[in-house]
Image (cartoon, rainbow, N blue to C red; front, top):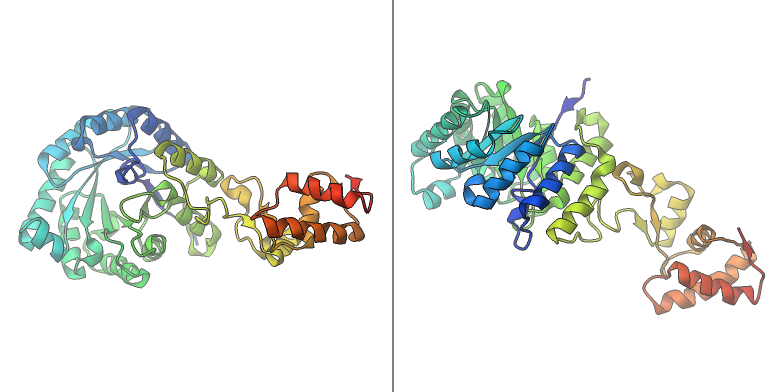
Amino acid sequence: MQNDKIQIFDTTLRDGEQVPGCKLDTQQKLIIAERLDFLGVDIIEAGFPVSSPGDFTSVLEISKLVKNASVCGLTRAVKKDIEVAAEALKLAKKPRIHTGIGTSDSHIQYKFNASKDEVIKRAKEAVSHAKNFVDDVEFYAEDAGRTDNVFLAKVCEEVIKSGATVLNIPDTTGYCLPEEYGAKIKYLKENVEGIENVIISCHCHNDLGLATANSIAGAINGARQIECTINGIGERAGNTALEEVVMILKQHPYLNLQTDINTKLLYDTSIMVREKMGMPVQPNKAIVGANAFAHSSGIHQDGVIKNRETYEIINPADVGVNESAIVLTARSGRAALAYRAKKIGYELTKIQLDTAYKTFLQFADRQKEVIDEDIHQIMKQVNKISKIAIA
């Protein structure tokens, strides 16, 4: 079966930058946008042009810079928003306007104090107006995750008629379970007239830790675009992490879903974004965390040293990490000590290793991690007892 392409829509510069403390200036945005283009993302959501003069300038400058990806600007279902976005995108090789409106009962009642018919009318008008400026118009049904499927299908059908090319089905509050979100995408595929002519997009938030799972469930059920950010940065608990969905699809080829992302650039891109935004990544973050390929348990270390696949399902090189890390702690065994000692020049016999290991445990019980300098000290002590060969 031929692989289906999943378009990667990166919103690091828009949704990601909404995080308190992560504000970027135009030059920083340009550096990240250029890297995203090189990484192989299909669409870069460069900002919300009407929100500030700075955001307008950033979208305009990114539009000039980006060579391969589509450049997208976000709007509300407001004519001025759309017109300002169109102006900011006028120099983009492949411009996209991303417009939409809330569709859940909560949004309709409390945000808009409107009827469902009024929401549909505003949605259609927004898409039609955007279509006057660009061919590629993405419509978002905000809070689609909590929107009744029948009404959501009706909204989707109407905006398709108005010219939408992409339908964004956001789980805005991160509420859905994967089964629910996947079933929602499947329902739209089966019940919206004209759905075969547009791309369905997943935009999932991580409030319950399910953003990646929901996005994959959406793709399995027919979505062909995933909206995500580097390191999963975004509002509240964050967005779907680009590196996670890309590697899930890569490591599960039987899904017959693939992206154009150059995965070997993922780790360096993660570092760039965390440094520019001043937003650290927790060590246990999947794919790009400091501990993603680090092993400190003796049992795990022994297995990885013998064959990496015993405890690693991803080759670190595939995401741009040089090699797995064998971290020496009080939980480490002889195999790990021998491995690390050899790395820095000590070739130990079994008797020497047994002696060194006793001294090693004394170090390990006093500190969280035994580093290379400590190994040299251990070997000096052991050398008094048994001469150690330097490899």
